[in-house]
Length: 367
Image 1 (cartoon, rainbow, N blue to C red):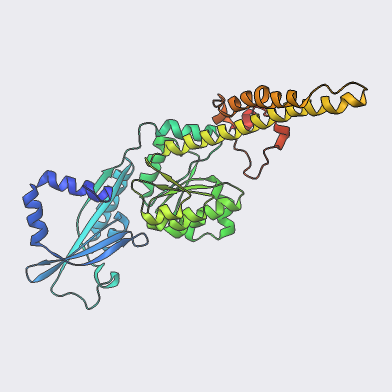
Image 2: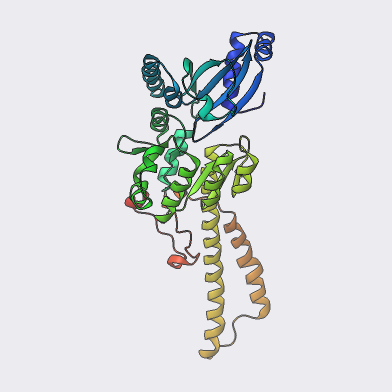
């Protein structure tokens, strides 16, 4: 089956309770006549179905969104309590509300349908992190890369997962999208480096986060897979789209596309990039050292009254064989053992910085 993973999980669960013929019969028995698609600002979607002579309105979305639409105060309190308990276990919560109408309003819109609902129930989905993600996150931190989680999920869910994989510690901050809206750009710029997790975030707020980090002279890599992620992917120094689950819009906006959608692939790419830069510096250093020795030998010999020590054939032999082959070997050198324990180099730094010398980073730099 193809489709969004959350929807596929719900359909799979339904098929576990019903047979496939019963599932299709229900689908045909209550045909859909109208729909208000999901959007990241409302955090819900609405469908309208025919039930006899009436219309069934079903709203599905974030628990706090559905809670605002409910009529019964007892249901509101129970939904909030239950959602918080499940979210603290790292589960994503989707709640449902409904109402029956004798006739549809003239305009199918949020203001005409999404209110005065009765609570149906809610579901929890577990999206466990991949097996190696904890190790990969720690490798990022050792390399001086700070991973930050930006999600539209419930804040308790985001915190539980971030704590589990090592993105967030007890001292780190979590910020809600609603809180971010009340901060000016200058205020947010001062806080952005202390925040490890953002929850209930809209696409515009993702763009603000990227801009705030860049204003603090950080080199930002942003991952995303949806249409709404395109602005932040475009604004980031490196936009990374998902090759499997990503939309065409996100892939067009990104600089890199992950074929396996794995975070570990990004870290491996960083390691490979550092290896390539190291080897280029080694190559240049070796070539300049060898050629420099040739130049000084040829230049100083006449001054000291000595015959020219190197004939053209000698220079050709040195350049092609004595210099060339070892230089090619340096270009294919394996990565240094501590390559992912160094702080990131400045993106604008010249290859000739520090006179092509490499010094091991201090413990302070590695933090």
